[in-house]
Image (cartoon, rainbow, N blue to C red):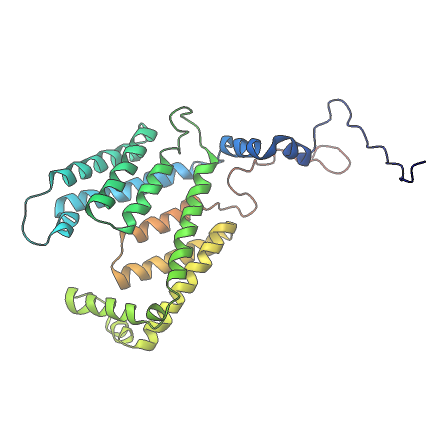
Length: 299
């Protein structure tokens, strides 16, 4: 005797018995689990719906931008000839947007769209929306399986997009936690500019309320709170209808009060199409095919 207690015999797994889930996870190791996650298929076609909606929204934006020259005027408000380099970028974005809506050569045109949007942001107009869009295009390029596995619906693309949207809400909400924003001054200045300079058609009771700093302060604090809360809902992926309601409230108010339209529509569409509707069934989890009661009989 060496003073040690005898080790109980471990039950042996019968031949043909499936390996328990925990044991399979340990055998895979970290790299194996990452590879399995990358190979997992999404369960529905809502990612393809988001790709078409996103590409369609920004196709409309790029067509209006090209026709009205809004990005061109950001280079100089004085009359000048169009910059041929920007013209090429805008045409590339139009072609890529149309092909992504149609679902043709998704990887190629997704990568081209990401490069063109990044070029537009870096070389011509450093707009946050352009940087955000370039990341979305790069992820959507893989929404059909990428260049080597076309026709698949990889789960990781939808997951990465949800994390990107959650990150946007979290960071914008946290950045608003400063005295300048929380005082309501930003909302006061923006709404008064829209009313006095653009003739913004607020109903008279709303316009009168927005002249009150107390109202603007309450709206500013509510907006920051909702953005941070929505980030949390997206990370836990439930409840679906609460997330959609919060996104609609944030962005309808944002469009009305700050004249931000395409980004607002993008975020609402993203939350509505990327977040799983079934709280018990996050993207990529297999649906149960049968129920086995305790007695082993098939239900």
